[in-house]
Image (cartoon, rainbow over all chains, first blue to last red; front, side, top):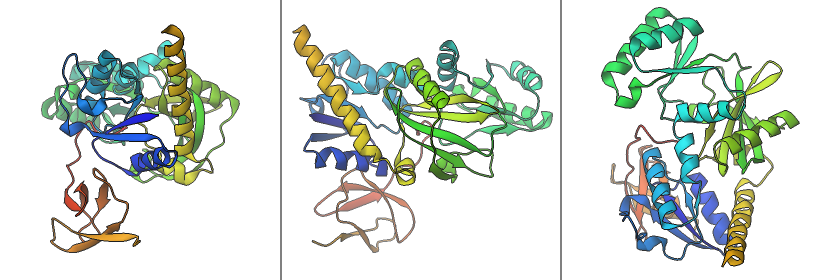
Length: 291
Length: 59
């Protein structure tokens, strides 16, 4: 197959994918999004002949627009525009999970400091304030007191981009010092790890330690439901253990997997490429049948 | 074939060693300064300071 890999940075994650694709003899065109221009009707030359585009854009804004352009051109893209659009925004992400009946932390959104303060008081302390767009645990605030809440909300309303005036407030989940990251392809788990830290943020990007995690049936069921809720694809589903149940706090659409690949027995890039091959084969068979 | 190649660190001017399989677009940590550098061309390998992190970057 001919894969277009859309990127703005080649990290170890992209390199693992590129090496796996090339080792299997697939044609790969690396497409640096910074050099491209997108016409309303004709795709850029770089996309000629590709069977599928794998979106590995680091910038969410680019990811959302380009997947939409590719959809218009009729070029298959992983992940789809719909999936990117939902996953890129924490409010849309939470709504999709709640709509699908997936347990997710209690969350409210407000647009003024006064309304946000009311939510904070209702949730009690601590609670969590998150930017609607963002990743790697950046700009997340665990609010421990009324004075902290007032200060953080005032700063956000004064200093930030308009998106920071969308106050996304979530109950604080007492997790056991760790959360679970599952890499899944259309809801089928590829591998999972726990991310542990003494800090309340357990992102691998924040330096959490990681180790392989064996998913039970309930976790697998929730991963499938969460994946379906956002439109499927190659996803990172994040779960927390909350008592006897799990709660899914987010689904990531341009998922990183280098830390996971180091932590688990599974060959993650090989499994991802297996899935990609099957997906392209399936779409080509479908196209032949309908031709 | 050597496993490493050398290129100039654009920040310090020092010759630094890189894996021989680097590719255009790849981000490497400079062993000289610790800064993130981007491979912008091969043959010869040219490096530039990598773009700074932006707010919407992530997964």
